[in-house]
Length: 196
Image (cartoon, rainbow, N blue to C red):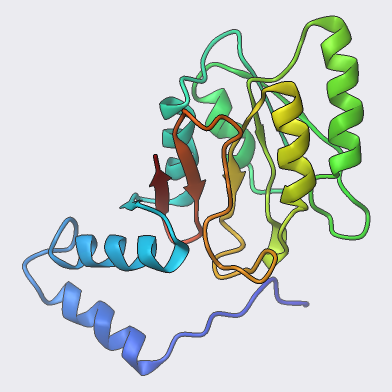
């Protein structure tokens, strides 16, 4: 069997978990704000919020973006179900954008083609959720340019790409096409980054 991924858990990691488990706090203790601050700093975001899982982070992002009934959200067909369910939980319709055969990530070209057709039918999405699959980042420069052009909100699912670099940076990418709205990012180990 080909493994999907391998964890790198060392004695220091185990000791840190054991320290928390032996403390008075299993949740919301003093380690949580420290983790959030260090994570925000690492990613170049103003804030990070620890949540129960990446699905919850995406759902919270959709709620913050006021995704709801009557809205359309597009994502990648190659992803964990959370990339679509986060919009379904809010009552939105979900559709999929084809992938780039080389990267298996959302194709910027397919996104543009689909948006041209959607514009003609009056069914543009409110949000596009590209997924950075297996540590490989999408071509966010192109995807952001396309979303800007159509005034579509861009929310990245980075659950599988924590620590990945885009143009040699490990900071949270410019995740939202609208400068005056919230910028949200989902990560792999149950967090949400926010920059305003």
